[in-house]
Length: 320
Ligand code: MTE
Image (cartoon, rainbow, N blue to C red; front, side, top):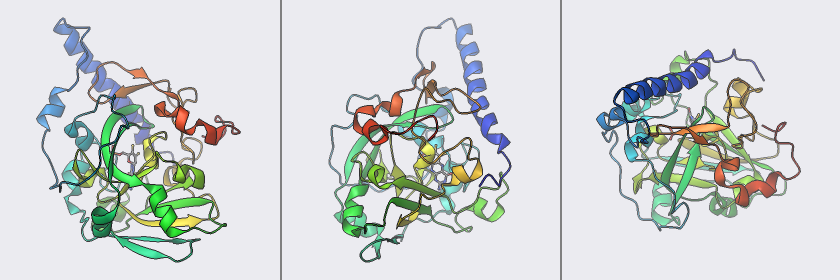
């Protein structure tokens, strides 16, 4: 399915990050303070605005990630990948006002006992919401730690009662060019919309896999995928599909959007792996947003104990 020409902007984004870092480092050295780790950049401070109105959520705290050092809200909500708005990371926060996450329904169907529709209202009111502090790692080499609020995807799977034919779960983002301007224009590298992602059934049932409705105590900002997105913390960020309207149980492995765009570079599994480089850059290290120095990438993004068993018979160089 390698039908779309290689998105040349993708590597340049990766390089831009490094160049910006390089310039910051040079300025910093000029100040003669080389060994300090910057926790927040000046730019991030300047853009410290809450761009969407967010509602407080009722949720349970958990011990997930209690020892991790959380990024601040502005970092997580002003440096985004949401191609339906723009390819530039600073733009979704400015453009996402066109998205209307309320009212919002999610269709559940495919190989299930009985298809049904869920409203976001119902989910927020009656689902077992928890806070999960997770590491998040983008395939481009940047990372962050975010306190997501959501519930186990397994909760929905149990309600849906998939039949024995259901081997994968397929997720689809809303298609509405009025709300997502790039779906109308499609001018940034021909991304085939709607954005689609998928998980194998055991991955979907894993307790770490959540559907997120919020972050930092309140509902999700639009640019982070309001009102409902997937979070799979041991996989590269492109698996964490935003603004979901459909969840289907299917027999065949779904063709996820980035795999359709460039199958040699982006696989279906997309497990974070410091030993398997992207064809155009190393995955051994990552830059946590706001940090001056790069840090080591962790196998399965630090969730090896919880997930490695699912891949024990697979060649992870082949199943990228
Ligand atoms: N979901 C949709 N619908 N559209 C997108 O462009 N980008 C993905 C993922 N989910 C994307 C998406 C990528 S590449 C990443 S790294 C994460 O969202 C970024 O999530 P964040 O903006 O909340 O950090």
